[in-house]
Structures are given as C-alpha cells and as structure tokens.
Length: 168
Image (cartoon, rainbow, N blue to C red):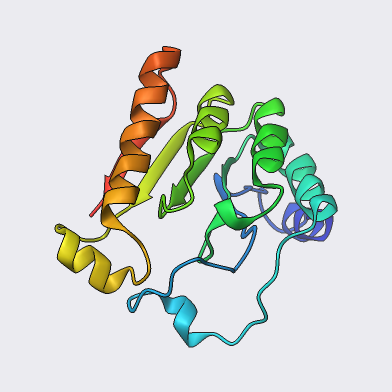
C-alpha cells in the first residue's frame, strides 16, 4: 500500500477505498451452479494469520469497511473468529455474507458478541425445492434453523448488531 500511496500522492489526492474485500479462503462447502467459482482453477487455500493481520493493520488508518469474503465461504477458515475479533478490536466495521450452512450456535453467539456490523445470509431461492436444487448438499431446513437461531441469540443477548439481511 505504500507504493500505491506514493504513486497517487505525487499525482493526485490519495483516496483509499471505503470498502476493502479480503478473501479469507476460496474454499466453499457448496458447489452452486450460479457461482463463478466453478469457472476458476485456482488452488484452494486459506489466508495466513500474518497476512490478514498485516492487511488490517494497514487498513485501520483509513477506517475502511472490511468485507471478509468474496467467492469462498469464510466460515470454513480455521481462524475466522480470530480474524473478526482482531478487526473489531481495531474498531473496524465488518460486513459479512455467508450461506449459513456452517452457522452453528457457537459461531453465531461469538459473532453477535463481537458486534459484527452486518451479516447477509445467502439463500438465493424462494422455496425448499429450488434451494436444494441449486445448493446441492445443503439442507434448507437446517439453514433456516441456523438463521432463526442466530436471530434468537441476538435477541436473547439484547444486541442491536449485526444488521441482518437475507438474500433471495
């Protein structure tokens, strides 16, 4: 980022992005037909803790919104909660999207306690039949149960965050 800053500071006013997307992993627990992951041949990997912490430490001065996902399912990363906690301790805003398949109660409780700012649950289907056709291997009932559990935990803890969105 130093090179970026030096390049622009000599030519024009430096403007850092308001949102920074960080792909924690390109792994996913689903193989949906509409997902562009199907058309890549990148090796599956997980971001190292050192790289993630370096990115957050550089971004924090600009107060950018952190978006810790792109095409992978971030909940698969073994250090996912550590990463969210690190960014929240730096007082950064975090917006997350997940397919909610792996959203077990422990993870929900931790995300709510960490005051994740925004979460979007990607359902992408109006019915169980369509959902299970496009989200092969996922259970519609289990995902709805996970989302309802998340909402209930948030209410029980008396938290206002995160803002919840369901994408259909």
